[in-house]
Length: 136
Length: 130
Image (tube, rainbow over all chains, first blue to last red):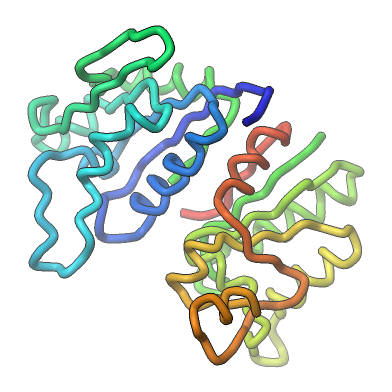
């Protein structure tokens, strides 16, 4: 759809249901897939809660949009990075997070899980290497 | 340089729209281009023409509209965010069976693709919000 391919970084910083930022960020990712850009998602601070397993929103009466994260591999998302310190500070680890599979339809290349826990230094490098940072 | 601006917060509640306005005005005065101003999340409320602040305060909506008029700015309100929050133009009112509209005529409602496109086509996307 676009001849320019930029490195897009979606920086997700907020918990999923306290505010609408997480859900509306996801909507940009889903729509943005049509533009065939090089897309990376980064989760830091309370944003790491967005990827946690077994979310149940019944009691708060809000839509549980967490199943959508597992499908992101089908929406041109190639990399998902989670900040290790943010996880640790909240008593979480990689096992608490959903897995996101990815497959390249053209080459047949597959990865079982593109969610990677990384150090803050790597997060900085990823942001620096991006052409566009959508901060939510 | 070619800028795109994203505003994520509503008027008066938060400084984001004020900061974005001053930034946009400053870059235009320096001779840069602003190819789009995109209103997202509660930022869509910046487009309500029914906004009525006290007379001794700034009028955030009209101020954006005047800047847009002077510089022919493309001010886009996200349709999904607007529908959730009741920011409506004639097309949306008809489609969704609403009995009123409230968008200022200097703004237009369109999709998130306009934000992604702005990010691709501009040299810098500058985001204002929390």
